[in-house]
Length: 353
Image (cartoon, rainbow, N blue to C red; front, side, top):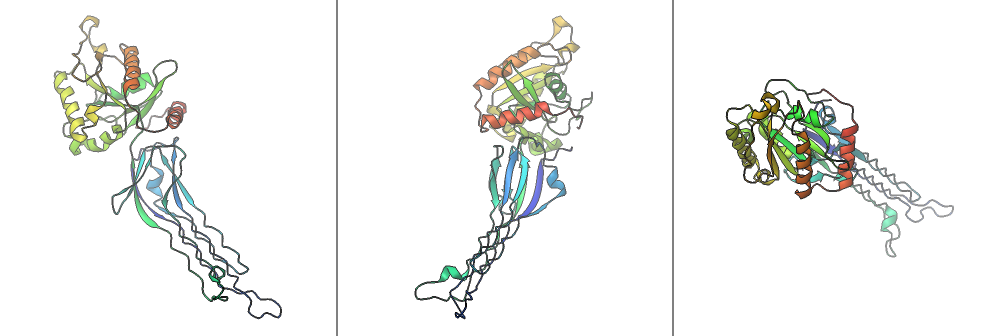
């Protein structure tokens, strides 16, 4: 399955059915009272968050969705049937915009909560509805109202507790594979990761968290260099950030400052999230020469790890648990997030890049 995080689709709600104009036909009453029924309402277009989805891939191949129209009213005051609604299932974390106005229609953060994005037209009233004491034989009925049509832009921002940020080849995917069941593509060259990866990490006996590994950032990422702006939006919803720097780099401090600056320039709120400063690839140093980074201002902790030998991973789990206890959670219902994490943890491993 390919990762798709943006899609544009056309949706059309159903038109309402027309009201009926008819009169009762009874013996010895050539033109009885009005008996036209109402038309049925048109079907809606509904969006529902599905915790088992993590891509908008389905919307790449099908771009047009139409709900059913309401049935026309009939004589004997029979109402037309309501049109069948269409339900679109999207990943939790999907933002839905009106592509014409740019306005935000919905932010799908809760699982299985229906959101109407295009309302069906109301059915027209039959002539029986218009009978009064002074107008006993109305000879007209209402047409049904048209359903709403609109172009929607879907944009997925992953729901994760922690975002892993680093330059290309800093060891992000290796770390995710070492502490979770995720199986991202790993190789010893830059830009191995081309799409975000998610993994569930067991922090202690009772606590798990969802980590998002985004592709490596380069200078100018906030302006779109290396598709950085597309990647950075996937950590906008995270509660905390782990900043990874290769311990073998000749300018570790410069790289750390570069990453922090890219976060700040893309969205100042990202630079305000709780964070850890972590040096990777400690296994490439003699045990007594592993660098001990100075804790930067604002960071909860700074230390070195090795995803290969496991050095420092227990501390990483402890620091993440403490970090998340302090970090505000603005993503909605905890049961929905638990279901999302359970889905990730039970999915079979995949090597899709």
